[in-house]
Image (cartoon, rainbow, N blue to C red; front, side):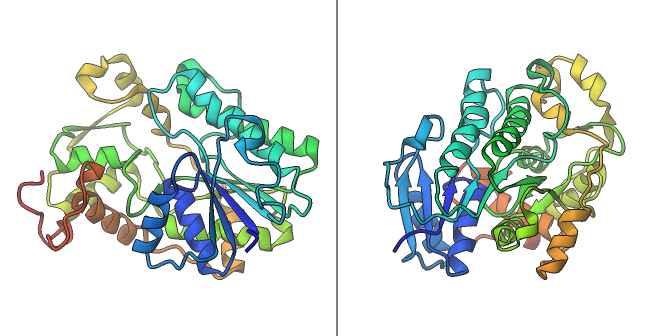
Length: 343
């Protein structure tokens, strides 16, 4: 069965959800992975997703041609979803650029060789568009994503590619153990005496199922080509309220004080416990979500209530020990009483 969709970064948090949603909608999917696809297929089975229309291909976005065979059975691919990226703090500049800049350009170049290409959907980020990357101040991860965003737009214009850019906020859902999850972990373990960022800091979130359905729908609508969409929940509480909501749900104390970002930057990391690369995400900025909301309205897509999504995610984090071990089936999570011995 010839795949009509290719998902790069298919074992990642966003990529695997894209694969699952495409399969649920009856698409034939090629999942591009660096190594074995066993982890992906096991996860899909755990989600009850029927995978007979799935093909797993070995891929490396850091090399020209993506390491795929010339034919590779992918000539019929209509839609390419690039969710491949290095999302981590503490990377070297070379490590970050290899995946997030060079890799993104290699994907665009490969997509341009598809004779029936309908759409290239590139996953960027809500903080990366506009301005020049500053690797020293922003850190390798954010700066490389910003550079990659601009590079993909320019290459797509040069090649005449039908590109749609998706700028998601912090994506939450079962299995998401990085980013904002570290703050929830510190809150749960009562290691968050003060909140970095000061008042009015806005760290928006978006539910993973909503994001996957939004992205899968994009190529079906010609007017989304050439557009960018900021996909996030405008109802996300400001960070102080968000932490208070989660603290109440988890039954732990919320930090009573906050520290401005400027002061945190000047204090030693050994004292604050805060990775300097995370500080640029602690912002009061707001984002133009109107185009994304209008598209979601058109396709009948509704976000789940943000408080409900956050509480459900917190329960999953606790049950899964924040990714440090397997979830313990049958034990109570925070919503029904915190498990003993897990804090």
